[in-house]
Image (cartoon, rainbow, N blue to C red):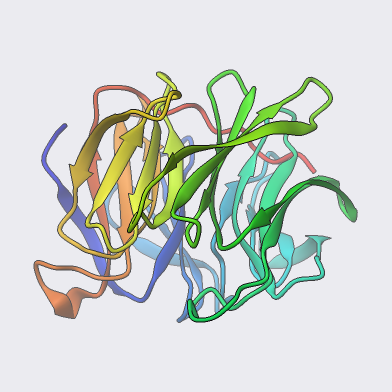
Amino acid sequence: MGDIETLAWGYGLLEGPRVDAEDRLYFADVPNGGVYCRTPDGAITTVIPKRRGVGGIALHADGGLVVSGRDISHVRDGESRQLAKFDALGTNDLFVDAAGRVVVGTLKSNPFDMEGERTPGDCWRIDAPGETVLLYGGIGLTNGIGFSPDGTVIYHADTTANAIVAHDVAADGTCGNRRNLVQRPGFQPDGLAVDEAGVVWVAEFGGGCVSGWTADGSEAGRVVVPAKQITSVCFGGADRRDLYVVTADNSEDKARLGTIFRTRVDVPGVAVPMARI
C-alpha cells in the first residue's frame, strides 16, 4: 500500500465515487446535493447541480451518468431520462453488470435514523427503462454492491445487519444461495469495490478504514484512513491500482469535513462496465 493523499475536502457525506477512462473522478455530496467531477489536474466542476441523495453513480456508454436518489436517472448534458422508480423512499448504491444493466438497492426506511425497527429494502436489476427485475429482498440498509471478477457472485453491504451479503448469480441472472461473506458486531459496511483477485474492499463507516475480504470470508488486509466515517471506495488510474476513498469527516482536520483520499494498492480493481440501458 502506498501513502494516503488528500485530494479534496469541504463536503458533507460523500458517496458514489466512480472513475472514467480519462481518470476523472465523479462523486456526490448526499446531504448538500450535487454530483461533481475532479480532473487529474485537481480541478473540480459541478456535473449535476443540486440533486440530493445520490448514493450511486455509473458511467453510461452513450455519455453522461446514471445516478441514484429518489429514482434512477441517466443524466447527460443537463437532460435527465428516468430509468426506474421504485415503491421506496429512494435508492442508494448501484452497480452495472457485464450486460450493461443497472443493479440497485432500495431504501424503505430512513438511512440516517438507525433507531427502532426498519423495513428492509430490495435489490433490483434494471433491464431497460421501466423494466425491472427483483433479484432478492431482506437488505436492512442497502449500501455497496459489486460482483466477483467472473460475475458469478454479487456482494451487497447491509449496514444494519453488520454484514456483506453474497448471492450466487446463475446464467439467467437469478440470484440464490444467500449467505454472509462476513458478519461481525460493530462492522458497518458501506460502499465497496472488488479487485481482480476477488477481494472485496469495503468502506467501514465508523471504523476508520477500508477492509478487504476474500471469497471465503477471511480478512485480506486493511487501509487505515485519517477519518472515521468512511463512506465508499473505488478503483481508478490507468492500471486501476489507485484506490479512491471518500468520507463524511476528516480526523486530521475536522474543519475539512467530507474528504477525498487516494492511495496505491498492489492488485488492480475489476474493470467496471458502463451502463447500456
